[in-house]
Image 1: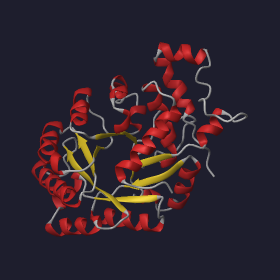
Image 2: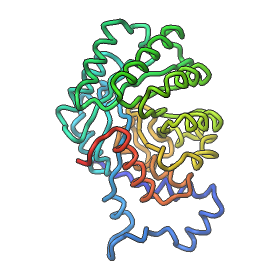
Image 3: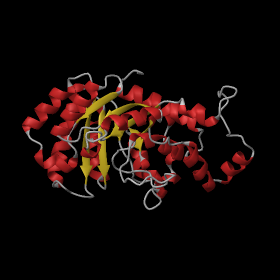
Image 4: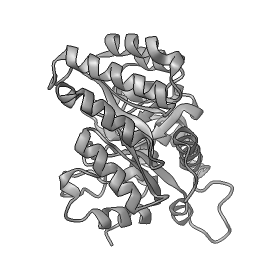
Length: 312
């Protein structure tokens, strides 16, 4: 078994940015939450907490050689349930297959990422609707707009996004959405369909405060990844993450992408894994001026309510 990752380390490290936190740490006010049992260390207590990774690309070929070990490591780290992202026809099929092999622990989404939007056909639409009928599929997506890379023409992205929004409306399933450098079009399309949709999460949110507030105004949830652990591009988010309502917040790794850059001790592999989710939780808790225990409990409850899944 590979080494555990503690959420306390980034939580304490991030606190250096806040004078109030430094004072409270010096007073030992955050040594352990009130509910810690006598004789239990804060680390042992947190290891008993439950986390849910709402976005993990577990079908990615980098996991082919050790997928079961990755899941075992995640469970050892307190990640008790995962939503496996479907981002293409084949990926959505594979996500459902994985979820069937791990009932109650893995669930799947079914969708086509904007990178693959040019391949979206009537047959694709029919397949996604078929997959959405399975109990293990708990959301439509990953779908949305990505104008950063433009791997598919923008008109094809908008067309595929609109069709998947209609699938969400027709099935009543939550939407798992991707947005990058496309706020104006994305917000306009989502606003047009929002009244017909159930729950919506803007996953791996990396935009501005103003954009975030607009999605909250639309009743969306916000998914936070290890992007906030990247000093090169995630620092701006630390100024507004505390403004996300607690009941709209969820956490994710987006593995194998976005491995936390502030991870200590360093891990040689560039691959992100769901076992690193506690590190993201600890960083986020520090930035939001929260205790990690409360953030873990809240985000886990939010994920179960959003995806309509029960505890394992």
